[in-house]
Image 1 (cartoon, helix red, strand yellow):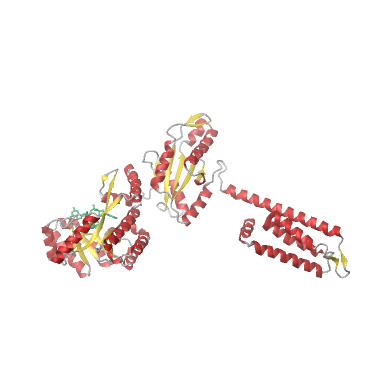
Image 2 (cartoon, helix red, strand yellow):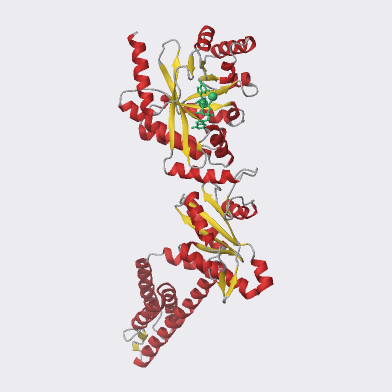
Length: 546
Ligand code: C2E
Ligand code: CA
Ligand code: CA
C-alpha cells in the first residue's frame, strides 16, 4: 500500500519542478563537498540521493542522466583537497561517474521491477483466474464509476444452470470449457470490455446507455444461440442458460444494490419464455403477461407510443373551462386499447410508474406551451401516483420542465389520491409542491378512509368528489353526504370539483348544492389536443358572447 501511495504521488508531481529540485540538490551537494574540503571527504556520497530520486521518478533515463550530471559536477573541476589546492586524478572521478551510473541503472531497474509486481498484483485482484475476464471486484469498481457519472445502463447476467450436471456427468474440464465457450460467444455479441466473469458459472454484461427493453432483446438473442447444443471438445452439450436484467437507475441506487439485485433475478421465478427475468421491485409475483407489459411500457415511453387526452372541467359560476385533466392513453400490441387504471397498477407494482408520470408531465407541459403560443390559456391537472412521491425526483423533474418551457407553475396542478396523502412524510412533499407554485387536488375524494380528517390537515386547493357519489346522488343519503362534503370544503376555503357527471339531472342537483366545478361526459369526454382546443374556443367563446 505504501509503495502504491508513493507511485500515486509520482503521478501528481510536476516533472519540471522535479528536474529543478534535482539540479538544485546536485549544486547544493557540490557546494557542500567544496566547502568541506573537497572530494576526499565522504560528502560525495550524498549524490546518491538525487540519483535515486530521479531513478524512481524518471526511470532509467533519469537515473543514468542524473548520475552522469552528478559525476561530472564532482569531476575534473572539483578539487580533492581544497585547502591544499590538490586536484583529483582523472581515474578517480571517471571511476566515480561509472559508479554513479551503475547506481542509477540498478536502482531504476529495481524500482521498475517493484512497479511491475505491483501492477500484476493489482491486475490479479481484478481478474478471474479461471477465465481471464474481469471479475466481480472489477465489476463493482466500474459500476461505482458509472453510478457516480449518472450513466444510464442495464446489466445483463447469464448463468449456466446445468453447470454442476455438466461437471458431474460429463467431465470437470468440460464444465470449465463451457464457461469459456459462453464467454467467447458473449464477446461476439457484446463488447468484450463490458463482459465480466463474476462467479464460476455466472457472467455479467454491462450494456451502456441501454434500456431494459433493448437489453431484453439482446439477452433473448443470446439465449436463442443455446436452443441447439453447443459443441465443446467435439461433444454436443446442451447448456441451460438463464438471464437476469437489472437497470440503473430503475432497480438500484448504488453498485452494491445493483449487484445484489442481479443475483436476486436468478432466484426470481422466471415467468417469461426464454428464461429471462427482469428484476422485480415489488415482493409479489407478477404474471407472465406483466413482464411483457413492462417491457412494452419502456418501449412506449421511448418511442412515444403513449398519448394524452384532456378532459375539460367547467366552472359553474362563470360557465367557462376552468381547467383540464390530462389522462393517459395507450394503444398497445399486447392488449389493444388498454384499461389505463390497470396499466397504472402494473406500472406501480413493477416500480416504473414514475417513468410514465415523467412522460405525462413533460408532454402535458409541452402541450400547454403550444396552446399558450396559440393564445389558449388553460390549467392542466396531472395524475400523480403515491409511488411517485417516494422521492423528490418527480418534483425536481417538474421543476426542470417548467423552467424549460417557461410556463407559469400556477397553470399546473397535481391530482393526488388519499392513498398518496396518508403517509407521514407527505406533508413535506406537499409543501414542496406548493412552494413551487403548483396547485393540488385531492382526487377520488370519499373513497378512502378518514377522508374528512385529511381535508383539514393537508394544504390542497381542490377536492374532487368521486364519481361513485355522483352516480348515486339522487339517493337521499348520498345526497346529504355530498352536500355535507361541499359545505365542509367551502368552510375550509377550498373548492369542489364533481367527477363523472353524466346527466342534466346530476348537474342540476350539484348546482343547487353549490358545487363549484363539474367534470364529466355531460360536458365532454376526454379529448385529443386538437379537439380540446376546438372545445375550449367554442365553449368559452359561446359563454362570453351570451
Ligand atoms: P381518475 O383520475 O379518477 O380519472 C377520471 C376517470 O374517469 C378517467 O378515466 C375519465 O375518462 C373517467 N371519466 C370522466 N368523466 C366520466 C364520466 O362522466 N363517466 C364515466 N364513466 N367516466 C368518466 P380513465 O382515463 O380511464 O382513467 C382512469 C384512472 O387511471 C384515472 O382515474 C387515474 O387514476 C388513472 N390515470 C389516468 N391517467 C393517468 C396518468 O397519467 N397517471 C396516473 N398516475 N394515473 C392516471
Ligand atoms: Ca384524476
Ligand atoms: Ca378521480
